Length: 51
Image 1 (cartoon, rainbow, N blue to C red):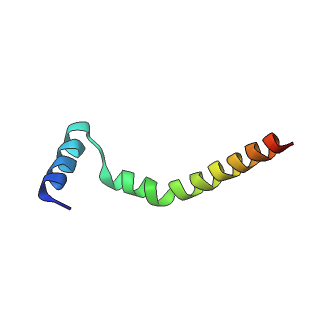
Image 2 (image 1 turned 180 degrees about the horizontal axis):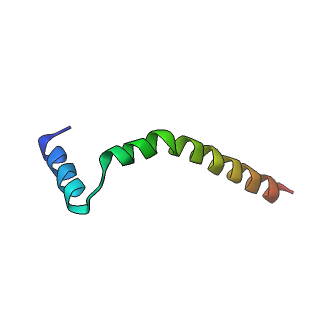
């Protein structure tokens, strides 16, 4: 990652008060189960359309 990119991320994190640890935790722990639920809903919708 370039220095400019790191500086930008640090600026955004500080300016908006973003907690990168919380973001990372969400990505690692919540997104996979959310993805499974979304896939399930999409498959269900597709099955309904095919009827």
